Image 1 (tube, rainbow, N blue to C red):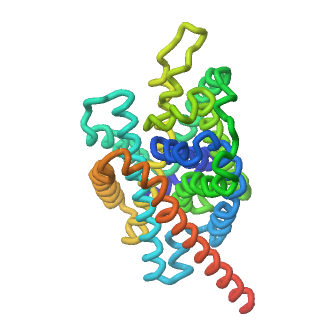
Image 2 (cartoon, rainbow, N blue to C red; image 1 turned 180 degrees about the vertical axis):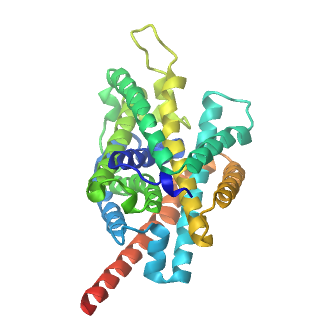
Image 3 (cartoon, helix red, strand yellow; image 1 turned 90 degrees about the vertical axis):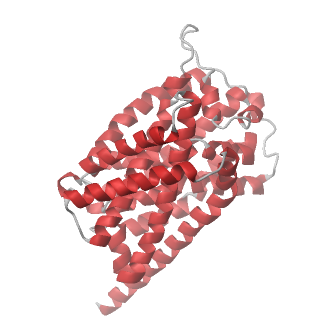
Length: 372
């Protein structure tokens, strides 16, 4: 990978974090939350401000350990070469699955909105090729791309909030806590799992590569909470404008809600344009996911040549395109996976692994202090 393009700013870190927080809500993330929490989904969002604190603190604790190293070198330093490599492979498996999920949902959204008869390989291939090109240019190019996407997203979301905000029906939010408070706590954990899990990709960027990294924790935390607010506003707009009952009928309820937007009563049918902001989230995860996997292969095989980098990116891209099309048999399977398996198989396992790593870091620090 190119060392010349490996620096990003704190603001760019904030943007990358912000986009990753919403990347799993395209498709199955939103619909699974509606089928679980229905009209009380906003309660789950509020509770997530609390439930996300522990995984966020664990992640920050991990990042601040040996900040000159990326996730792969840190794990080898903690557990040794072989066990560290196994841990790295586990992380890569998680990230690869996230890429497949996002590509699956992005393909479904494109087919629903624009290209109903276009082959999936073509649609997914475009996403992957663009992400590979960004990775060839380096993390700095990814970060600069994220800045452009952020301002585009800001404009689109402002239009959406102003337009749908005037159409909210408060009756759609009643009654409150129909399933009980305990159920909402469980739903908030599901919500948090969709939010936090993609953040592991950021660990592939060493803290030293962040310009003025003394404020790293602030930028990261700001991105996390801004992401929660953004998704929370999305849920409120969907519930208040179309009702939770209708929202659960659609695979992409956010897209359906956009159909109600009209500017000045004269400009209508803007949903296809406004829905583009969701692709910015998914594209960020695809770029960062491929960056994560490519960093692992470079670390594993100890090669930084351009040729090896191109081959690695190409192989990752081809495998991702193929398996993303076959990961689920149908939409129902993807939603069931999001509701039941994802929070346990992926998020809980990742959280346990982060706990183990944090304990290992603490023990190593204690031993080091005793020696001195």
